[in-house]
Image 1 (tube, helix red, strand yellow):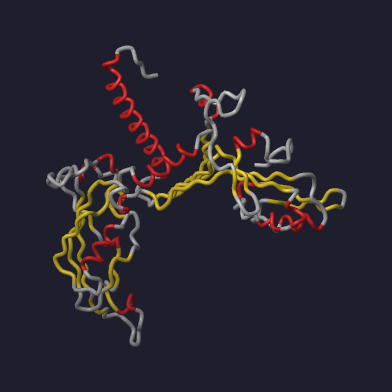
Image 2 (cartoon, rainbow, N blue to C red):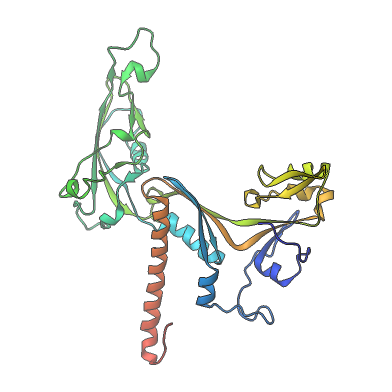
Length: 358
């Protein structure tokens, strides 16, 4: 965002409270200070009505695997809680057991099992139960895939061909070669969305004539905090909204130089009455590289900040769960955690009679 120039210094209370200050060689005002009695005459006590009024979610982009949205009006602790939950506490289905009947390829059993475990599986985890060590596999807690591939010479290959994909059959074994083996009522339950790997082109192993792989894998429900293969996201991250404050106008050749200090799209150079003028048009694209502060002519005319409670959130799903559904599930996980704490506090306060939880 582009701030209005009220106080060009960084010393007013509102700036120190609501902005992270980016200097040439340091970053200051990084810690949140929004708590009661910290600033004289400013009431910073938490109020639910005020929170509801200020809190916003603005969705900027959604694709099959990616989502970017702005989360406004929350503290970094809450934004980071969502990030950590997305990475580690939203359940998915993943391959947990590999039963190898035969593997004569160059990739040894342990490495092949590891590669299989990291293949994302397209299956709704809410339709399955967690499986403990004491539980036996059932159609409610386990998904079964089978894989058999044998490499042979391709009789139709041209003389002198050197490409293994054309010279041999099954020279490479892919995730798409995994065949779902429905158990119990799974075929009926998932008839509208058959279970399969999210991507069919992940290379698992390579074979040459006479080599084969024959195995069975079992998928179970789990959490990313136990193993990365259960994490539903490739990445979940956020950054604070950049803010660029300019003192006066930057014109002439300085405008062109000023534009070059930022990534493309942050600053435009326009002509007004035949004079070039730099205009900040989209500061959210800025990476806050601080390149502009290296130049003496700009150092005292430009201030770089980040808005403390405006988070640009990015979710990149591995494909097993849509990114917008991932965030909803992360919110539910946090809600359940809060409810657990509330229940414990109420149980603890019960012997004291009139203590109430609001």
